[in-house]
Image (cartoon, rainbow, N blue to C red; front, top):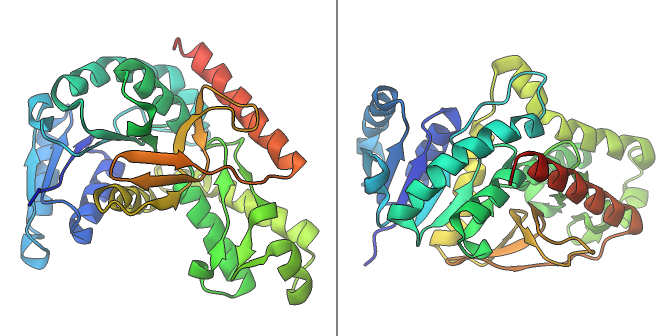
Length: 313
């Protein structure tokens, strides 16, 4: 029986929230954590180890690049942090420089692993990992708008007073300021929102629904302003992606993937619904979008491409 091994590059708050969530989900039997701050990372691993009597057995180790060998999944959270008032794209050049250093070293020991990219701006850094590693695009997955879409479903469920598991709605495009909601495909219990809202008659949809999306888009900024970082939701979102891969679930998730002729957009990583299995991204699903949504998608792609170019990729 194969023993799943997951390695985490970066022991900051996001990396460690993910490690904890991964351990609690009983998805991996071996977790390797690597960070240039070895002393802190050792402390984090010791803290996690104290949980062992309460969870299924898992080996947690502090490692270096050679210890990545045999990993099924490499999750990269390393990079400069987003500061209060700073947008994600402002981090691009600095973090691309970091990726140019670490990706070749990771490839030396774990070229067969699937990479999950978390570092912001995640769409730019996913493209950077793809270009630097020269791996098949299917094996480079950005965390994308998995968390944004979950927040979207949560706020819609609260507004409509229904279980969030019965709300199906996506945030697509950039994981950032140019992301957009796909209202035309949003559903509650199989009923499109355009049909559900007249039945509900709870609010003025034209004014209320845009406000819900703006709350989703600014969710992370509000958290960062208050506590300096976001990590709990990201950790769980990463665990959800990990589960889809390790369990070969063929789950549909809005991860950041390389799009090719998707509404005339090619050669850029951005979030669209993707079927995720043990090999990474199996295929991208092309939603039927309204003209305004297509325009939003193309504008988002244009913005990401401009940042990629300015980052020296």
